Length: 234
Image (cartoon, one colour):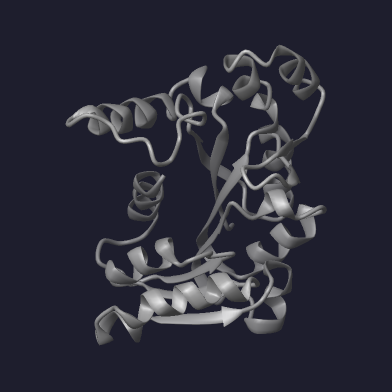
């Protein structure tokens, strides 16, 4: 997914430009630090104090030049207007957050307002149109049948959370003046693969190449576990 994001940023902004990035629900700060290392100015917003502490610890181990490019704030993505002025950022990331928001449209509208004209809104969401794929491929056909009529699922921590449909998000993005510019599938073949699985030498490269190509190709991207959507502020 990082490759997709970098591709969209490179295609939207001049080479070498240092961008103002807002990472909403940044978690432990992995993406924020990666972008700061690339030279961008990054603001991380995280409501979970434990995750925010982990991000601060990771940041403290970075060189001073990187630390000074990162600002970490405890806060909720639904309250961006409290912390920032409209148009303050060139890129807004909201990855793995919408599934925990019962009514996402107002939050998305707020995120779009944070973008300068031509700015990029990057979303990573659970694909509601593919919820039956995981249990179906694992042989749990009863769960797969139920998932066909559902827009919620149980995550790896046992929480019931919501998923999003591409068509609905396309409409929402158009309505908040950040129409969909590009979209990808994420975890087309690997959603049921354990995170700790160790692959033989060379196999990881093949898996990455497979996922990257499938995530850009119909019909495979449509049944990916996750969707990466990129909207552009008009």
